[in-house]
Image 1 (cartoon, rainbow over the protein chains, first blue to last red):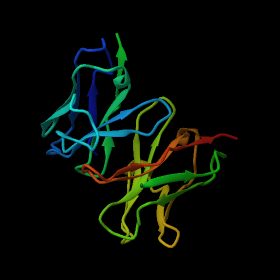
Image 2 (tube, helix red, strand yellow):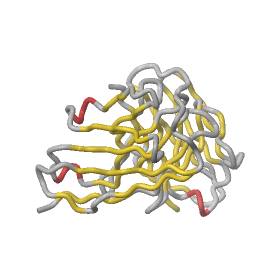
Image 3 (cartoon, helix red, strand yellow):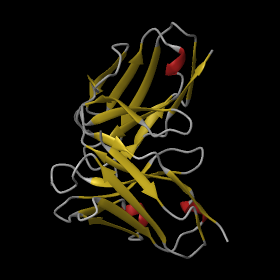
Length: 106
Length: 119
């Protein structure tokens, strides 16, 4: 099983600033990585696929990078609607998710 | 517009079998391009893939479920179903049906249904 580890568990950032979230895979997954945003009571929403490609309708302030085992999600100029929980997901061998990073308002 | 809608009992007793159905609208499951499956999320916790199925009938499951899960398709109704046997309190979760394509445009989730395992 491929284990996905996210850090930090909670990130406190002020609106308008930048947030950087990390995700590490226990073995190489090439670029088969997605990032999801989840708000309370809602299903996850796809932000990034292929490690760095934005999904349809996702604002340009969201960007992803990395390959192999180390990945990053960067959110520039944080808006109020961006405060949520973020999950990375590998789909190199079916699916496993990280434990999530809660992005909260500082 | 593609929509997925889960339906289920809400409450299941320990040791019994949980049965869920997902009705897909706006997209035919009668093609083998994308898998259809189930993902769950215990209250306040992260996401866990349960398993997936292709139109061909090929199924794939999370080994951690130790063969308790069975996923099937009913193409005549454009539905997929999940059966999870011998449930315990640890199976209490929001269950999502989902079809994830790993691309820009095929990433569909139901709204989720809460299943509580309790006597």
